[in-house]
Amino acid sequence: MATAALLLAAGESTRFGDRPKALEPVGERASIRRIAEISLDAGFDPVAVVVGVHREAIARELRGLSLDLVEAEDWYEGRTASVQAGLSALPSNRDILFWPVDHPFVRPRTVETLARLPDQDLLGVWFIPTYEGRNGHPVVWRSTMRRDLLELRPDAPIRALLPELGPQVHRIPVDDPGVVANVDTPEEFRRAHDAWELSGDE
Image (cartoon, rainbow, N blue to C red; front, top):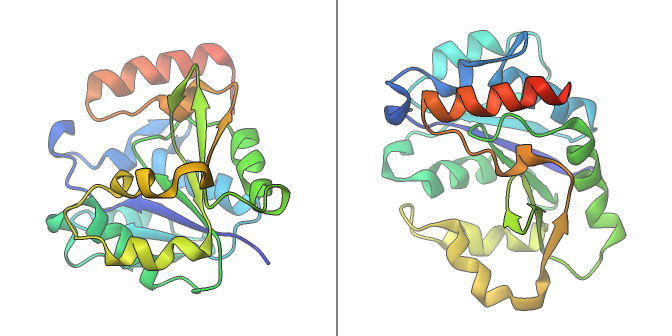
């Protein structure tokens, strides 16, 4: 069974000068379109994009792609509220790739590696790519994580679940600095984009 993809683009982008971070260009594509197309090309099904305050602008950017837009009405309550809105719109029996738009420089081959993990590693329930020892995104959740994720407070950090899972959390080293390039400001985005261009990645 295919793994679903949950792409998160519901935030206000306040640290980005109130511009939709999801629309910042990575090469010739907007960030959100790049991660959506990579997810579709890797075979994730369905692909859902969670939107909030910038819904209309993001919807225009994604026109023509075979994916679902999910509106997080309570996006302002916290990131977890938006994740929960997306989870509720996905089939309950699917494993899930969770990819926030503030990590737009991940390589396609890294995403393809993550897509294979649920079939290759039957003991893990949360798969985290790492680069030089640092945890990154996107991550993969087993469908069995769904209940715990939905029961979190809307303003609670999702990582609060990690200590309870112990050895079921599997960290996967990857040769991809994009997994730890978390871009919350224009300056961070420019630095990460320059590094991405120098690498010659897609």
